[in-house]
Structures are given as C-alpha cells and as structure tokens.
Length: 545
Image (cartoon, rainbow, N blue to C red):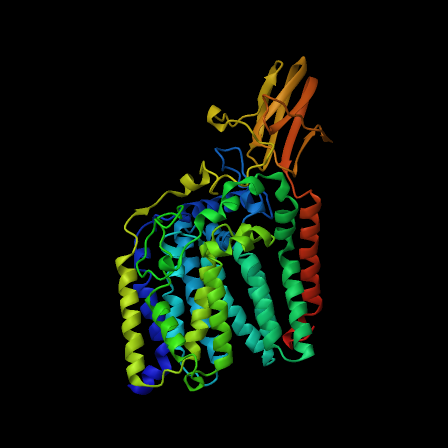
C-alpha cells in the first residue's frame, strides 16, 4: 500500500483538488465575480469577430452598445485564443471558461512539482510547496472572486517556465520547443503580469543557465517568442495614444489602494472590490500557510542545517520583504518615479510574486520528521476549510446569444474607448447606416456588422452626409464604387464613421482592416518568426539555434 501511495501521490492530489477545490464549478453557470462575466463575453465577441472575417480579432463587434470596441487590440488575448476552438465546437462560453481555468490550475501544479524536483534534487516529493501553490489565497481570489482568468493563467505559467529553464540547463530534448511555447503564451496571458514578471524570469534564467551556449540559446528562444507575440504588443503599445487609457483613473489612483501589514496577515478571505483605505471589500491576506511558513523561516534563518540552500533562502526573504514593502504607502516614491509602475494599477498585485517566493521557501525548508508533516497537514486542512467556507454563493448564466449582443465594454472604466468617440450611446442605436444630411435611400444591405458593411446608397440631394453607427478606430476604411474615401467628423457625428457624397448611386463597402503600421509590422514579424521556426526546426529539436 505504501509503495502504491508513493507512486501515485501526484495523481491522488490531482484528483483531490479537482473534486474539492472546483466544487463551485460543478453546476450550471459561473460564480458572480468582478470580471468573470466580462471575460466570457469576450470569448463570444472574439468568436464573433473571427466569424465576421477578422483573422486576427482586434475589435469586439457588439460591445459598447453595438458601436464596437477595440478591446482585443489592447487586452491580453491568450484566453480568447484558447476559447476559439471551443467556441467553434459549440461549447458554451461559460463551460469554456471553466475548462481553461482548471487546465491551467493543474498545469501550474505540475510545473511546481517538476521545477522543485529539478532545482532541489534532495526534495523527492514537494507536496508542501505544491499545496501552498494550489491553496494560495491570491489564486483562489483571482479565480472565484475576481474572475481574472488572465492573472490565474500567468500565475500558473510561471512555474512551467521555470521547469523548462531547468530542463534547458540540462539540455533535455524538446526543452527549447516547450520553453518557446510557454514564453509566447505567457507574453499573451496578462499585460500587467508580463510587465511585472518578465524581468525576473530573465534574471532567473541568466542565473541558472551556466554556459555561454545555453544563455545564447535561451536569448534566441526569448527573441523568437517575442516575435511570435508582436502581432499583439506592437499595436497595443503603438496605438495606445488613440484610446483614453492613459487618462483613465484606474492607472492614476494606485496611491488609494495601498495596504498595510495588518491586511496582509489577515487569514479570512472576502470577495468585495478594492476600496480606498483599510476598510476594504477585498481581502489581501496571504493565508495561514504563508504566515506560519514565514514565521518558521525567520526563526530558523540563522541555522543553515534546516535548509537545502541557506543562501537562496536569505535572498528570498529579502525579496519577500521588498514585495511586502512595495504594497504599502511607504513605497509611494517608487510608484511615482519608476516608469510604467503605475500601470500595475493595484499595489496588492505584487502578492502574486510573493506567493511564488513562498513556494520556493517552503521547498527549501527540510521537513523530514513526521511531526513536521502532521503540522503542515493541519495548516493545509485549516486553510482549505477557510476556502470552503469562502466559496462563492451567487451564480449567473446567460445564453450564447446574450453574449453575442453583450452591450457593455468589458473594461472597468471603458479605458479602450477611442478618444475621438464622444457620441452619447444613450441616444440609441438603429444598427443601420443613416443619411444624416440630405435626402436619399439606403438599400440592398448585404452585410451590416462592425467588421464589414456592404450596401447600396441612392443620394437624391446635391450632397448627402452618411453616418454608420460604428465607433471609428484606426484601421477602418470605406470604399465607394471601389474608391477609398476620407472620413469626416463634427458635432453631430462625435467619432462615428461618416462621409459625404454628391448626388448619385453608390456601392458602399466599409471594412475593419489590419492596415496600420503597427499591425502590419507586428503581423509581418509573426510570419517571419514562424519562417525562422520552420527553417531551424531540426536544430531546435536538439536545443540549438
């Protein structure tokens, strides 16, 4: 029995977690969360955009009350990409959300298990750090309270990347391919997490990869992974000045969301929103396992014999203190003076990295005595019971058609709205092209969506002003009888697509295209990166570039 348990420990933990942790998923619908419904709506809109002809979807056709919204041009696309084949198979968007979350959660655990066995050979079964990863309150809240699938995926991709870096260090077969796929996935998983974690992943790899050859190979892998994701990042950065993001309050009010040590060490979980001050709706506690692990670590810090690697543990303790400090008001100078740090939006997001540090620290502590294992088992049981008690109580469900016609923007403050679009959407939306000035007739409408419109126009006045009920964003172009025309704007137009024609009959075609410098360059670099991969595929099989 003991041998069977030792051989199947991973699978037992796997089944236990799937059955118990995700119990709220075993029913119709999804838990009511901060962002979950928005992400599910994006799944539907991504599929709809692809179905309408956007080979690389950048514009959600039905969002913003039907005027269109370029959310895919700026917000992390990995979850949307993974949902696309599921959507094409007619799987409900809410079920797709659950499947993606559960898959990454389990793969993240596999990454922790394999990574720690590589970096600490003496650690045969890293059960304690694995459970600390799976039961991290930050991950629990990201899944069940905040519904942020992007953060959950990035959190789970990090240990998988660390594992492949260790395999690359050993020159294991296939490690370059896997590392390439994981890095490209990570770069598309969540904008803010990429900003936070990429420099640290790079430093880790540079530390662990000892030879010049492996470092060069790693650098080439990173460059190709970046090339595979520039189709997203170049437009996201290059066209950012055309939307209201930089002026959105969520990026400017980070100082209102600092927390203190008392909040970090609370054990209870709460599902509210991040409010101003200490009386906060969202709990930021690091959990019982973290608190006890931290205290034990500090007590044993001066004794080398209690750790597999004492020096690394000290470094992790220092990093952990800095990660706690950066979440408090004492770090305000950093937030104001370090470029791009304000795009993190909420200082408490650094707890994600803090939890990853804890996983490593718990792996470094030697737990060879049965009494210690019983102690940790009790801690995990208590933390697990606290999470069960904090399971979501409210659920929602919508039909596929509801998500196809979703009226909101799916972002907090509409920060992806084009600056030029100032039309009051409360005025209503007819869905049809309008003759705002002049007399005439719109007829023979062949296509009428925000990706492509095709119709006939009969202008019976000396001049007609045509307005299409679509928010203009860079990349749109309209051809009249095959000739590209210029748009007009004004007080009554307010950023909608509009143009003028003289008397006559016209064939009108309006399309949302990839024809901007950032999109063309990003798409071109994607093709170039794929060509490089095809050309060097045999070398990569042997972990060489």
